[in-house]
Length: 291
Image 1 (cartoon, rainbow, N blue to C red):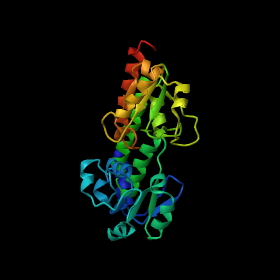
Image 2 (cartoon, rainbow, N blue to C red):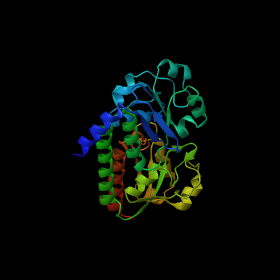
Image 3 (cartoon, rainbow, N blue to C red):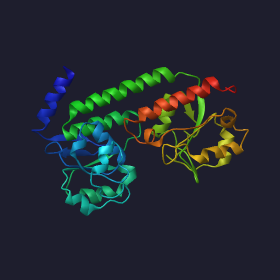
């Protein structure tokens, strides 16, 4: 019955205007659901497909590689350097931009095109389902987006119930080695770590993605170090920590990696990364003799 009601609402929306609030509090109004959409970040492309509206995409940016069919859509540049002329030529009725990735200075330029612009800036796990619902509303695919959003919320709740109350493990999440860089507690990945019963040792830093020193890591002495590189392959630089045998993560043989596409993109696939991370933390938790 719920999905029948949503389908009716979706059909009705196609005959009337659509208004949503984006991630920075702006009101975005469409005269009718969008049919020609340009998405300026890979995670937005992926979430649009999750919302059942991938067929409405006419323009994407480089690295929009999931799902595979997104690779056949015309590119307008990269998320950091896109072509306004190419965007205009595609005649979109909606532009979806990434606040921190595209840069907020890009908003004014995009608005000058006279087209509706929606700003995406997901920071919380809950923002993934929220984003998918909003995209579905703007594209007129409410029923499909609601189904996917509910699935994500159910699976997140289940993971928290299974792993969230396990013995806490102190964790360093390393996004790069040179410079050495991590994430603070405001980042979605930090929430995934908490979901799995871990605790981000740099959660208290002010910067979202702070550069840190080896000395600060040794001082905080994480029980686990998690790394993500540029691909699904385990980054070789993760083994640099073996130079520090007194580090708990080295003693625990807990230098692990997670596919960056499954944990660094705020999309439905973060559940794949969360499940992988939870299982690996549990292996450390119950098989390391030092814990």
